[in-house]
Image 1 (cartoon, rainbow, N blue to C red):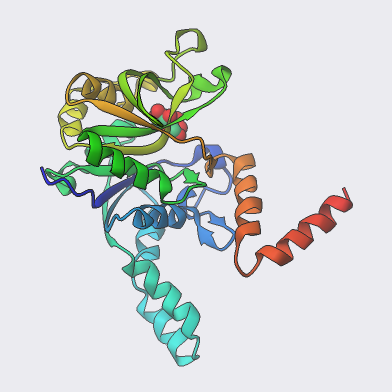
Image 2 (image 1 turned 90 degrees about the vertical axis):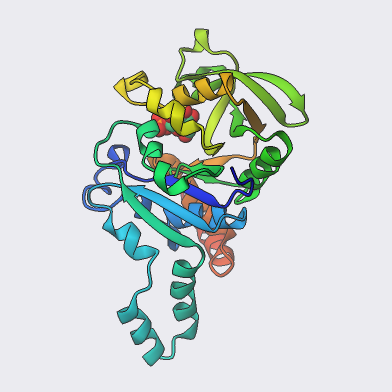
Length: 291
Ligand code: G1P
């Protein structure tokens, strides 16, 4: 196994049923936040953490994802002819920021099954998984901390957030033992436990770093919660095998797959936008004053 983490897997095959009607005819990952599709934030996050090879797991009606991360000769020619150099450089840069690969899940059998689709591409390398619904406030910082933890401990790890106990049943939830500042060992992990059965309030955010033996465990994983092959169930096995660590990260994220949090992302990322931020702040003040 090589030790440098250079590959990322982004499972993007879901149908986006939490976001209808917007997702009736377009992938949820392509919904725009300020001026970019949601998935571009996640790809940029991976690139900022040093990843240069990205496999996106897609499904039916997801062709727009492939087009977005490809060159577009017709558009580039038009922009060039019109002398629009800045947008031209921007659209080319999207396709050049990493090496992109796509494969399809075929059947919606769960997140663990989606990650299993990456087995051949990943081969014998450590890799990260980024769930594209979750946009990290820290940008590449979280994944970078996970890569650092992998270099120190040599085992798989996952980003964990501390949430109020009444929210744990929405997430993978970890039993933890403190190892170092912000780093825990995970002896056990369980998908979406009832609050009274939860081992802690430390839950899985959508950022994972796996050693390639995760695929052996995924092959052995039978359907769990929701009758789906759960990634968390394979992680419970890796915790008993080559080991599993947690990187505690309370810096926050936006859930781009959920309508209200999507609006929060528009507002907060709009305010941070280098060109639009100041005018947008003024617009919000005026709107709030009229409420
Ligand atoms: C998935 C995982 C869960 C994790 C969550 C993070 O759940 O199965 O373990 O905590 O993502 O967003 P989902 O949100 O797809 O139900």
